[in-house]
Image 1 (cartoon, rainbow, N blue to C red):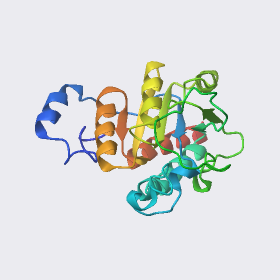
Image 2 (image 1 turned 30 degrees about the vertical axis):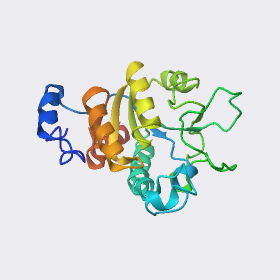
Image 3 (image 1 turned 45 degrees about the vertical axis):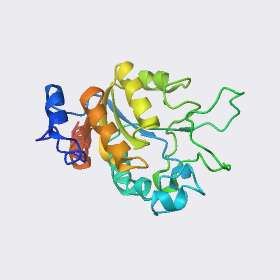
Length: 233
């Protein structure tokens, strides 16, 4: 549990009046029972152009989040490694490159080009054998996909989530997860967006309405405890 409900990246950005207005949302945060990890849109297109400023890569790679996406790779590797070691299921979602038959795209972002590998999961965060990768045509991982059935069949009651973008597909998945009855934990260091403003404001808003935003070390402590209990049983 976090010692300070607002001890997160937005603390010095959100004004005191807003913090006071939202203070009635304060509560204990936690990782829920029977969790699974859901990684949202950690596909190659978000990382194209490498670890550079978003402004330096966005014209050639409109889907890229540059250095902001790359900053979450190492924390996400820690999260995935700990979850697998503890026997916690890992699931991914990514874009579906099939024709949308004129129904439009998940967002209105300009797309200059896509190639066969655009929506493959980044190698550093790649799924292991047997882990589900859900392909979606809309922002939410739940819309028009088998994700809900998959989680229900496994007896999952809560989700530990990361990925991007915080203001886009990650937020859409968080809201649908909450609407479907899952407790949601967002790992702050494992989320990304193109701009700090979008990232911080959306994390702040979701933390107060739909999810518990927790730091990586807090979530790892919980996961490692699960692993120790399971090994001892």
